[in-house]
Image (cartoon, rainbow, N blue to C red; front, top):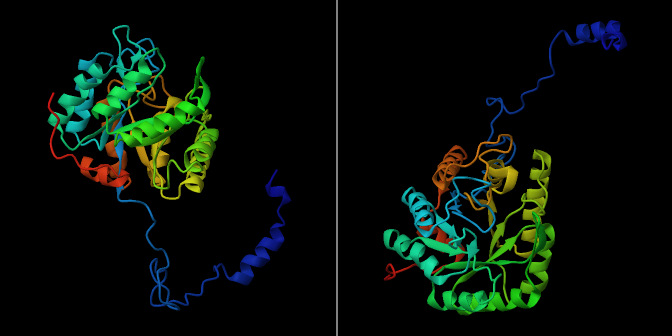
Amino acid sequence: MGQDRVYWDRVSEGVARAEGRMIWKPYGLPEIIDPERSAFFEGDVQPPWDVPDKIVIQPAITGAFFTRTANPNQPITPEEIFAEAKACADEGASAVHLHVRGDNGYNVLDQSRFEQVVHPLREAHPDLSVDGCLVTALPGEWDEMKRCLDAGVLDAVPVNTTAVYNGDSLFAKPVPLLLEKTRLILEAGSKPIIATYTDADVNNAERYLFRSGLLGSGQLWCVLPGLPGCSPMENPRQMVDGLTRFASLIYDVDPEATILVCAAGRASIYLVTVAAALGLHIRVGMEDTVWRYPHRQEKLASNLQAFRVAKQLAEVLGRDVATPREYRDLVGLPQRSAAPSA
């Protein structure tokens, strides 16, 4: 049907006039196409992209959300969490992110349990930055958070500038707690991490943390979309559009931001693949997703499995995994002189 709409007699006349030859005038001879220089001006034609050579890859070992019903391989006990964290650190993780669980398997804020993981991890890897969520959801946990901060258990602590229905649960940080927690983190000498789940969280951070003067430019941001109730990423187009918008919004607030994108929800490894190609940094592991791939039901077997795939991704993109010392320099953490005593 389509060929019937073509005026083939005119096509034949045109082919004859052109003598079957394309229009080609190579003004830059002797080079046909020089990808780097022009014959008519001095300067680069296609300069290298502004993509950092170094990429942070941080495994997030276990979080507050997923039980073994969601993933039978989920690490729960301090021993399991330590073993998974050490395995990733042994293979070159830039930093590690932790939660700890109680005897019932649910998230808990417990200094002793954090120390059971953090102290031996730092003894094995003194330079390693260990951050974790001091989530104050239960009675007494606010005071426990302050004890953890005073003891210097963690190098950095997220501040969630959010109010979302995460799955079937309402997850909201009241503004007074948001401000006071940030102040306490700073006073303890730890690094606040701005944890964002939706576009609106970026605006919350701007209004309360930046416009108040509590924080200035050059912060570490954690982007965690794709979970139920967070910025939706239900297909590849949503994922790409959502991530580029997310990063753009953050740079409007904090032009010197370091952005760490989590392999979250169904998007999983695809999301951090795009992030790494954009020159951002990435977080992978069993806190943020249960799936290896967006289009398959296969579950993550371990954090080391996720970390190894992320290392391969970095290699394919020509980016080197930042060492723990390089990570500390990047985010503004002091170097550790020695491992802490247990």
